[in-house]
View 1: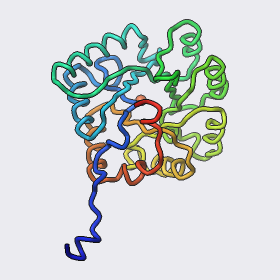
View 2: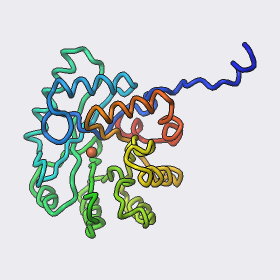
View 3: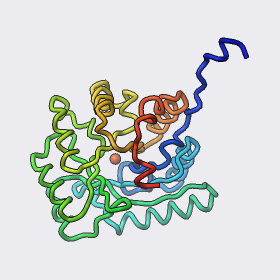
View 4: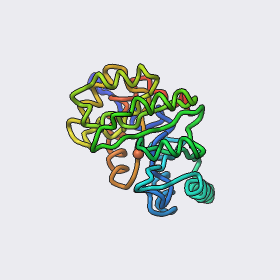
Length: 247
Ligand SMILES: [Fe+2]
């Protein structure tokens, strides 16, 4: 072996096997702004499986104004997808939870409906990108006293917190986990989002990674960065809990 060979680093982590579980995606067909039909869903799942993911907890939006989903809409979409994945002999597990928008409608849902959680009562929540919800801590508190364990989706994407990084620590102190979008660290959502994502990772505030896959453009970028070993470099060494909590 030549010296050059010896020092060359090989991209042995050019896949997402270290992550294993994708716990945030919009892969179920025709119920939100993700996959439009079941053929597309299976195609997306196949691509993610080829990157090394083997378990998917799909999280359709439940956002009454725009995507008024519930178990009634999510369960059939899940069954249809599971069936087609089986028909095509793709060796992955597919489950469903939801991504809940924290707005006034959610309080009604929490009162009246079955909450679609990830395993062990974890619940994936999101907030408006446009305007800060001044009651968000109350929502997190209400969820906690009901026995749910909130996970805030893509904290790095809420620009109104970018000048107030202390807020992220407050969420953590309240028992809320933080889930970064994989593509945030690539600059896909812009430089500010990337910088905040990397800062949160460096401060050990991030617990989980999700792909938040909606469409083929996301998959192209995910594939590109995975194959270049970038996700492993930036996220894979950070002790993410996807496998320990959800595998
Ligand atoms: Fe999402």
